[in-house]
Amino acid sequence: MRILLTTCSYQDTPGPHHQLMESQGWEIVRERGPLSEARMLELAGDFDAFLCGDDAITRAVIEKSLPRLKIISKYGIGLDKIDLPATKEHKIPVLFTPGVNHTTVAEHTFGLLIGITKHIVTTAAAARHGEWLRLTGHEIWGKTIGIVGLGRIGKEVAIRARAFGMKVIACDPYFDEAFAAAHEVTRCATMDEVLTQSDVVSLHCFLSDETRGLIRTSKIEEMKDGVIILNCARGEIVETADIVAALHRGKVGGYGADVLDVEPPPADHPLLSAPNCVITPHIGSRTYESVPRQAMKSLTNLINALSGEGECNCANGVI
Image (cartoon, rainbow, N blue to C red; front, side, top):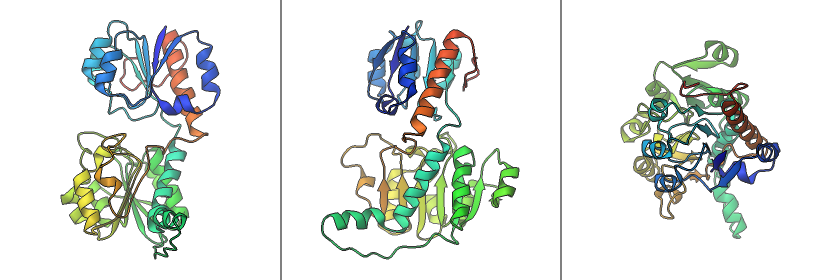
């Protein structure tokens, strides 16, 4: 059994997943992802399974991987880099790991928010260089945070927002009324309603045709002046040129993102030098607590699917 392992946090973080994988007797080929379509095409065809991160698993990659490829096991929950229709057509199960990283990502979201509102990144960097830069920040107490996508991560963000004394509004096509009632979350009928009423907009939705480019100039113009936007979902939900322009003219008061439209970004990516912008390198779920949970889930999914025994989380309905 030959397995392609591409996720770096899986490989770099200690935990029981390493021992369990070694005990399977598989041949493991390790690459440092996320891999481009070109690199995946170079590798495709010689593996029984992919244990992947955000690699480009396109229709071309899937078809070149046949007939040997049996299973794709995703480390994480975002499936937008995998051509799901192609996997279903060729009856290749796509496994994923819901419910393992919501605490970590919610904490990271609030790290970005506090970093922006209190100018922590800017002033700490200045202090390290001998400059005593005393900028004036903002409280988040009493502000309205709008959550787009009230799934597991969105719910954890809502809980933390209420602890900080924020008003929480949210939208989600599968809105959990019981949770909302228990945690004082106000339901909005549309994403536009969330965007226009919020002091802080936090994105926790999947990337889809409906959400791609959701945050663009026309929507930004409808938001409050000085709005803070947080993105721990997918970079493509935000139009890069539009958010950069809005930051430069002050319409958007801050942008905190753990994801970009190109990862890793080129050195001249405009968000890396935009004002009031904090970018982290897609590490929102990368903690010593979360990584072993995700790794074990993706690995046990794979083991169970290959053996035909035990439970596994299948995203495309093939098994």
